[in-house]
Image 1 (cartoon, rainbow, N blue to C red):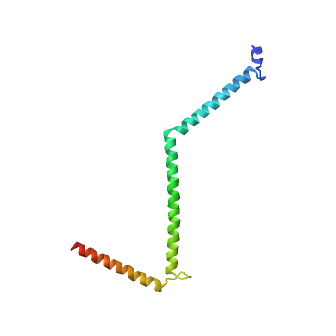
Image 2: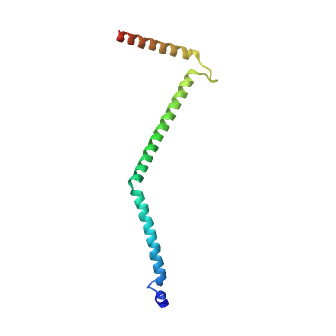
Image 3: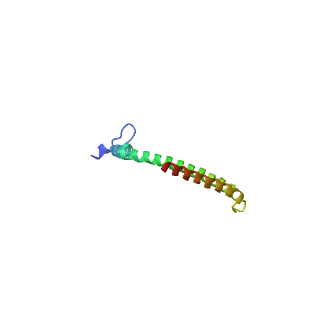
Length: 114
């Protein structure tokens, strides 16, 4: 029986080496099939799609936040001096215009309601 296992194939491998190679190949194939099954599973595909959408939304929100921050900084720079103190010469006219618009809107609303 020992002679059968010592028999070598054309590549010089013994029967034991061939059987070990086959077992190793089967294990690798099973692992590969498991991985493929996991990749094409609907829950995996759904999770990947969800992750892509979230990443895209987060990127857009981040860009919007940066743009809004820049806008606020520009606006703040218009109404404050270099030391960060308010500039009444710019704030008062804007406040008056804003107040005037509120009065105008309130009067129009009253007219519609009556």
